[in-house]
Length: 92
Image 1 (cartoon, rainbow, N blue to C red):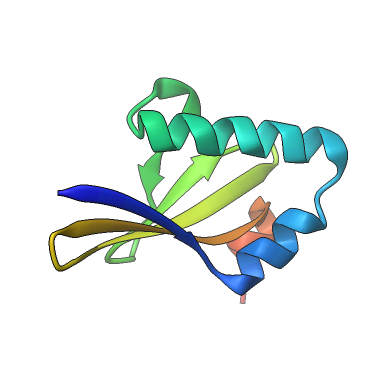
Image 2: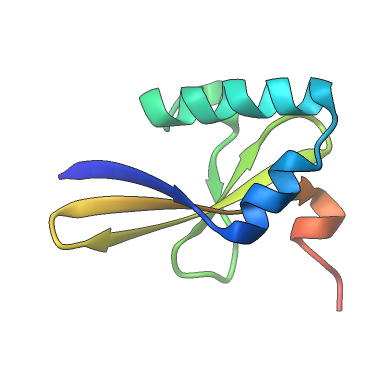
């Protein structure tokens, strides 16, 4: 199975809006995730109550939500949203 990486337009827009320091941190985290999704520094975990959404920590306040699913013989890793905990997990 081949791992493939994609991002939503929303993720791309949010990523572009990050400050320089956070952008650098996020790039490093994304590179690590692409090489080794089980690396402990990612604090990778399933988002409770969802089927296939997972959380990756960039730093103490910024999170990346990634949707992981299968398509043909590929595992698709869709970078869905990036932002503060409050932005990615809004309280209704």
